[in-house]
Length: 101
Image 1 (spheres, rainbow, N blue to C red):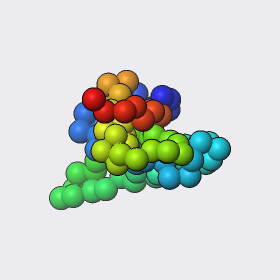
Image 2: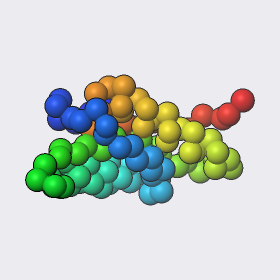
Image 3: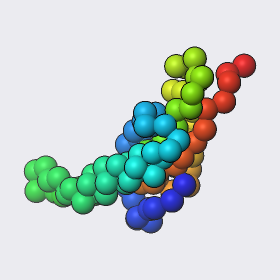
């Protein structure tokens, strides 16, 4: 969807997060995800004298009324996360829930 540090590590962890706040609070969900992404990026852990740069790819999907299949929500969050990685890692991508075949 947006936001990236173009020099993100190739081993950026993923985080799938169904947005529980609903469509009207989408901006708030995106803001929380961005704060989390930025906090992980700002952290520079060190181990045995080496420092590391971290990034976080987040797949965010809004929950809409009438959803009945948890598997569809988790699948959509996974796909949104993969899209964030394909777009350059260390990003947030907003996906949507579709019915599974």
